[in-house]
Length: 152
Image 1 (cartoon, rainbow, N blue to C red):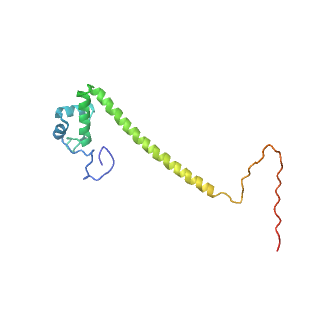
Image 2 (cartoon, rainbow, N blue to C red):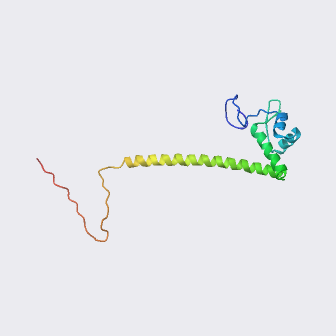
Image 3 (cartoon, rainbow, N blue to C red):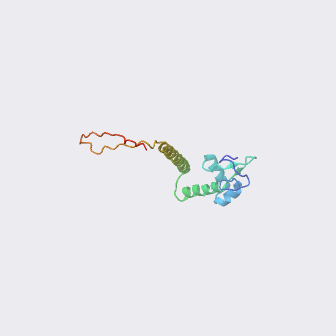
């Protein structure tokens, strides 16, 4: 198990697998290794740590480094602003995930309610007939008399 998610095959690589040492991550992101250390200290990009406390970057971390560089250089946003943008993007992603969870829960509850409703309808007595008031203003009296059964 790692700090970023649940259990998975330790040999299966994903975008979140921390595999790149700082020199490789710096080369892939086009940044200086000292810049990566600074971003880690500021909490902009926080890579996983190896057993010897060395930083290990994932493909997602490298993409985030590129995004930080683009926001800083191309958009002119300061690092505090970039950190806030990243936090808000993470919050939006978490909220989207929560919405999906809640939608699934609502769908499950609706299915259970429909199933229960079907059970209730199946339990109705079939010998009862619903009464419909045909002429509500007429004041007529309806008398029901059972048919006489003939004996053979």
